[in-house]
Length: 144
Image (cartoon, rainbow, N blue to C red; front, side, top):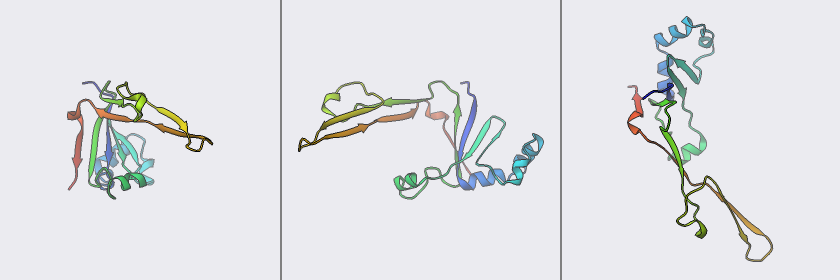
């Protein structure tokens, strides 16, 4: 399977440990990226064909996951980029009577009259699911 590069979403401790490696620092000194060493660890950096990106937990992500991040601090999740059809998105129909047994669309907008006849209710929704068609290519790396 041909791919463009590997992308790695790294937890905080994994990212820091990787950046502290002597070989990583020497790589940046050797290819005119030494200025980055003065500013501390960048959130995104590339070594060879692997891009490492620090994963930051957002407020919504922590609420949805009982206060925990989706990527642990001591791990990284890696996946190939540039593989045709590796990640796909599919859409389900809206939860409306008129969309039962129809093919899902990316977006739905629906309006209906208010009970008092003084306006319209507006409803919009999207029912998407994105998935990896070859889950065996997804890898998790950890540090102790």
